[in-house]
Amino acid sequence: MHDSDPASHPSVEIVPVDRVCGRIRPPGSKSLTNRALICAAFADGDSVITGALRSEDTEVMIEAIRSIGVVVEASDGGRHLNVSTSGRIARTDEIPIEMFIANSGTTIRFLTAALSAFGGNYRLHGVQRMHQRPIGDLVDAIAMVIDGDISATSPSGCPPVVMSSRGWQSDSMSVAGAVSSQYLSGLMMAAPIRSTANSNLTTRINVVGELVSRPYVDMTAEVMRSFGSVVGVIDDASGTQVAVDIGSAGYIGGDHSIEPDASAASYFWAAAAITGGEVTVEGLNRSAMQGDVGFVDVLEKMGCEVRHTDDSITVVGRPLSGVDVDMNVISDTVQTLSMVALFAEGPTRVRGVAHNRFKETDRIGDLACEIRKLGARVDEHDDGLTIHPAAHLHPATLETYHDHRMAMSFSLVGLRLPGVKILNPACTSKTYPEYFADLERLIGHAHRWHTASS
Image (cartoon, rainbow, N blue to C red):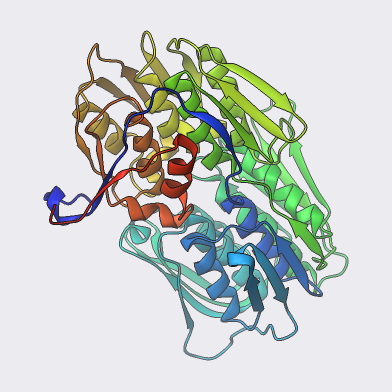
């Protein structure tokens, strides 16, 4: 939600820098951490997860699985997780167990599917924005197979989600793919949970219509395989329809390592692009499980130099040109690219991301609103936006809409433009609590912090 009084929030002002040069290793991937937690929570045997992300999104996931008896012991600042499932039990009390999910889309979507397959009575709810984020397509898919009842109780098929389940009673289902790939990922990860009671079962999930953010589905399959599941992702001859087959094997506990977060890495690569610097992100390479490493390919099209090694990706900033790019498969980096586009020669057109309107905030309309404050022209489209760089950008106070990616992206403008203030910078705790501290270390000097009264 937008606050009409900027002074009512603390803010941070990034002090401009000539060139950003250095090396950094972002924290663990949120997407991989929460997928590994789901698989570990329903595995046969204990698991150890290393390199995990410590953030609001992962903490609400951990608290939720603890409520069904899974023991999660964290050490090394939350980066090392021991997961024990010996006390896990479906909650079948008449009064459903309450799970507060804050605004974590991965958590509520993955848990809704997993708990429906596991069985029990639950109510999953979150902050106000969570109750405006769609989950109806997932609930509809589950309703066709659940032995029990499930509903999304807010208007337009949004959380809270209430369910009373004795598991799934069918091995075939369909789910729409156009709003979020997390619906399909959640169902995929739930299938081995119900398979533990059906040793000869193979589950088929058909995707209806377009599937957005396909790399996240492939990531889900890889995580599931690392826990012993047999998963096949099937594309039809036209390349427009997707189905997934999940074998009868349940999850097996074990040791699992989490990659650095590629979405978070995009801000540091963009910092090099915007300032003509050179930034190396350690721990990621071309074959990383996360599709967002493809962000560097877009920077390369804009004119940057990109260097790859077995354990790092480096971006060297060069004069930038606008591009016309479909970002459907890397939609979490649209805000990052939009900041780079402000410093390019010519307009940048972003396509294929209509689903971005249903994220933590409207990442098309709200993003356009804030970019205009800087003096640039932005055209909104059904599937994205076009950014027209201004000859002279001017300082502004930018609203983050409680969206972590807004805050992190807007910090990039401040690397070149003095006087840019970012409201509510603490919202980065959702996925990257140490972002502004890490950015300080990379650029070599402190930001200016303003209290709500300053």
